[in-house]
Length: 526
Image: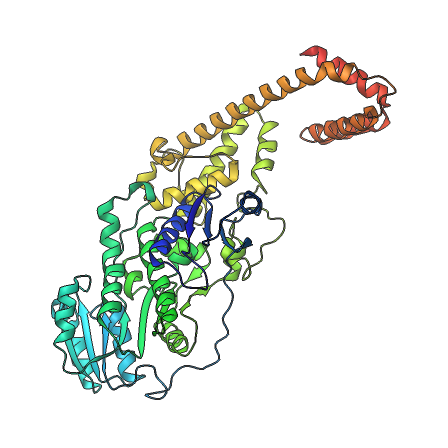
């Protein structure tokens, strides 16, 4: 359990605490069911409240005044239809609008839109390379042709002194900010170093703080965040943490009476911004999780609508409900948007890890090996986006198949859910082929089965003398007999259909004394 104070909520939030939530949400995605996030207020938290937190089974919980709440995304119904050209825009056209990441693909798309739709005439485009960035000169020429005056500066916005120098040299004061800069450095939590985390936080967090502190009298302060901070995204801990700060800063600015809007974007089409650095496998993985790409036109329409809203933070993204319903465990925060079937048959052909174990329990060793290998091959193919498992091959190495740390985590999570085993994130590196991995699963399941059997025999040995001293007139004897009969039926159900039917008939016709005789005989065998 990770506990923060005032990191999230509808009131004034702590942006630094929000960073923790972004990071831990990513860790939760990498380790399903193992971490709980709890945010409390300044008041004391009783043991009773903590008990309710644990009992509710939610991955994220907020406690305010002893009341336990959980977060849910809801569909936002926009009242406006978007800004019309130069009319009613928060970018009033009378001052300079700063766009960070302004010479990148995403920054260029936004800059054009600000000029064409919002009537902006003074633009300051900031980026690490300035006019040296690919396509920067062509972008400037296009914007000038549209009627804007454009200044491009190579400026590290995270460097407070450098940013202050550029802003102080402007002829027309800043009236609007669009903070669209950012970098990606994906990796599972275990692989992150302080240097890697800082490299991602700096252009998002430090730059946002500098823009917040060095500007005033603004009509718009818009930050481009990411849905990774809200939904949690395996392998994007640093990026989720950085963007969670932006979301919290927007809340903080609004609470201070300042303009502030954080847009936690889903996926833009591949040519834009961070999406441009995604591999095809990444896009397929996001699609399996129910997130599909927005076109530039769709994203810009959502941008315009968001500017007219009063919410400090919105999540503009496209969800595929059908794909989400196929996800084994829909993220809790999305459960109001997508309702999963009460009972699901998974794409591996087994409806739960419990059923898998039941099926394996009646198989020979050879059949178990084959079944587990097919299970592994199926999930490998699904993670890699193959149509079937034929292209995988039991002896092909995972690195040869194209696995990286993120796909390794996804496969681990799938196999953990399918088998009920707690598996390490290093699974495919410890067992580098599907065949070796399947054999490891077989060994783990067998060891666990033997351990369970030993434990049960120990419990039966402990209970046997207590059962045998019960007299025929003991009040609880019949109740215990009924429970044992029901348990026997369940145990027999893992056998053949004929065997189950015969056992049921025998048990249903047996008297209480016959049941106890049967148990007595069974106990004496062990």
